[in-house]
Length: 70
Image (cartoon, rainbow, N blue to C red; front, side):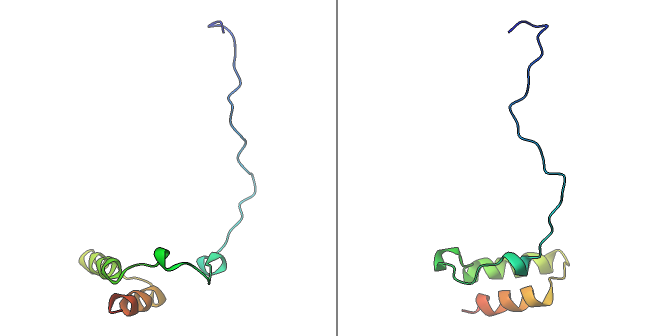
């Protein structure tokens, strides 16, 4: 290709329409255990949120607390 030639980029176009969804709409109910968070991982998430002064959504916080003691 010559320096003066134009080239087309080999990329696909981005969609113009935004499709929104909530987490509860896309969560799967039958998931293998290898994808579960370990109690140690849940404790770490709770610890880091507390250290940073971040409030977790109540449903998430409750789920992490239950899994943290499992």
